[in-house]
Image (cartoon, rainbow, N blue to C red; front, side):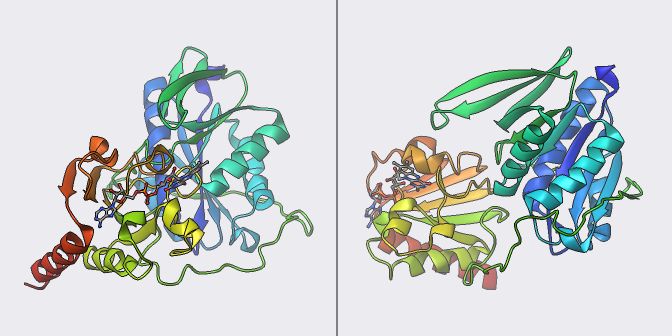
Length: 331
Ligand SMILES: Cc1cc2nc3c(=O)[nH]c(=O)nc-3n(C[C@H](O)[C@H](O)[C@H](O)COP(=O)(O)OP(=O)(O)OC[C@H]3O[C@@H](n4cnc5c(N)ncnc54)[C@H](O)[C@@H]3O)c2cc1C
């Protein structure tokens, strides 16, 4: 019985676009579907997401369901849970996978609790072994991995460790016609309403979806010097973020913080400027493809994980780097 149950992926959207991190769940789901011969069903949740759903089909899903309603334009646990309830009812999935975003983690916990389902959070590997979903998840700041398993006799809910899976490459030859999913949301069902969305003005791009992220650390020495990080990010078409030391000092807002108590990022290129590489920071960026560190201390821990290291004073290195990149782009 369990062999036939599909893999259901829930994808978050914002303003009609599927969030980049949600595609990581498609990759993880596609691998599970392939190894166990199951169907991969993607559920796109949001408002005005029909166009976006086409791209999801090209990214590997066998079936694409669309939960499209004005009440789903902003992500709320109750709204998304209503969509997921309908999708679970319709598809009886063996595994329900969500990206490890703040919303994904909230919704997964809620759905698992509501339906009394097994819940595997923050998975960095996933496999189906016999009648069980087997996952590993990092603990103690990535120093150890735990292996966890849950029986597939009922739906198992799992979220992913951000950056552990890369988004799939879309195949334009694939053609999956999205199917509307009927979702009932009555007045009062959404108990927490979002009263406003504050834009992080000044951010070149969302930290979690940017291909290039430049992080400024305490080594900058002053709030004014954060401009070096912003200029480099702007030259490289990336986003600028900060360590907790920097946000604690009030040089940058908390939402720009990356790490254990900040955002989890997995860009193609991470550049740490005056960042020591404390484990509470590195757990939030360890999934980056290429890591570059600029630090005047050759013994700084970040050099142990860096692919490229520049030892020297950031005030000398960073402006030259920015200048060189701008010059190359312009000529
Ligand atoms: C519970 C808990 C949660 C935490 N969560 C987070 C989190 O989410 N994110 C996070 O980032 N931290 C977090 N921290 C804090 C973390 O432990 C570190 O204190 C912090 O990451 C250090 O930030 P930093 O690298 O900017 O500063 P520092 O550790 O002070 O490093 C500054 C670096 O800059 C270099 N430097 C100095 N001057 C120059 C120069 N002129 N040129 C080049 N290099 C220079 C120095 O050699 C040094 O390596 C947390 C801590 C705790 C206890």
